[in-house]
Image 1 (cartoon, helix red, strand yellow):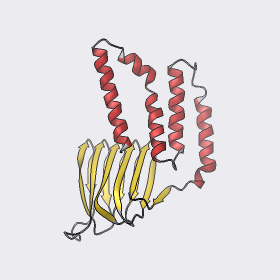
Image 2 (cartoon, helix red, strand yellow):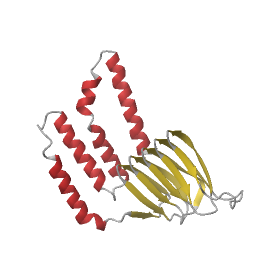
Image 3 (cartoon, one colour):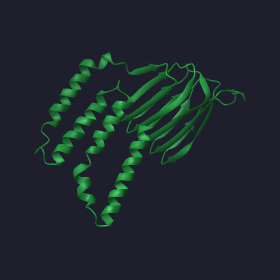
Image 4 (spheres, helix red, strand yellow):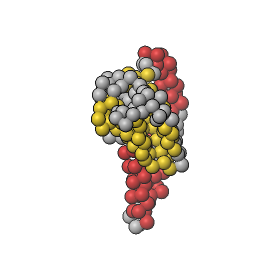
Length: 218
């Protein structure tokens, strides 16, 4: 499941439902949104953490900031004086323990899953039968290195980028078919096609971009 796609679609759906109920005089959408909008940050941070638990620092900061803003919005706390100290503590933890966390993740799994918000990840696959996976970036980025992987028949990647970018590196000799729907964004396949035979392994990339981009290269 592409968490970035689910998150973005659910957010748009929720806003649409609130506006519809507001127009039907069932509730006040403006009041609900003004009070509960920080929930978006909390949920986004949780999804980013679940998708990339090894890169927990930025998701944790997003969750803490969202929770603090939500408490302030609901009147549980009177000010945001706790936010700055909390952020400083989290940054300190990141400085102390960040080096123990590799910035580049290697995996032998046949599938990959990555959801990035206000952050980025690097994943290198060494799978002997890569089948695909899901990659999402919202105000963030992802670098997927498949140059040491071997493709399984029917392999496909689902890529979703909103105000972010996804870079996919493939070995020479792969066929790459990219399909999707760019909205104020674009796709760029700069792989060498002349050296690819008709029986070469095929990777399908299904991409959706909104003010973002997807690049496929060697």
